[in-house]
Image (cartoon, rainbow, N blue to C red; front, side, top):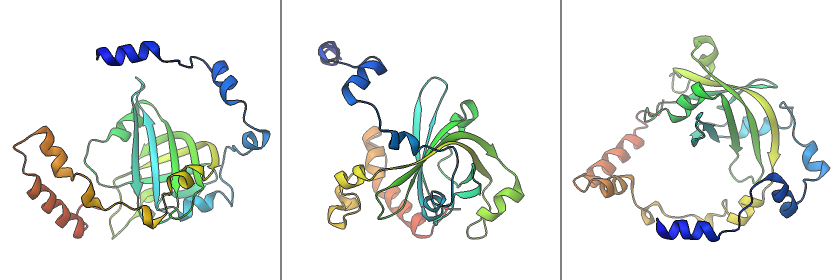
Length: 215
């Protein structure tokens, strides 16, 4: 802790937007103009083709959370040009995102399409809904989600490919074998030496192979 405080004391930091703008400059008129308040027939294609979205939420105290959500392409339904419905599938029941939304409805969505560098960002306000009729079209394997996240869009815009190009994310030659990283069981065991990591990982793999608890 002492080293951290010493480092913080010697850091040169930016403390307001004026300083930030002196360093970065202003966005171009073209960049400013790309931010809309609704989807159109072009931007909604990113939603329709995306099987993966990142959901950002925050609690009133500023605590943030980003949660990955995935399903067949188009699982986030476009109800109209300003309204999206994200189905909530079974998870670990921590419900971090959902609890945050109840306290602070502001959310951010980042839609990712495999092999495509451009992403779509949607910022707006979320509501948790349980209407059977609304959720029925989101059924997979005959199972209707218990609830959904209804998002009213405030900002809609595409984000450039630079992050994907820099990271070479879609280059198969850069893919990492899962075995090269610690397993979920091993991470649990690091906190509790008595935890049976091998059994946990084996049972988890079997559940995933059966797609148990997916829907």
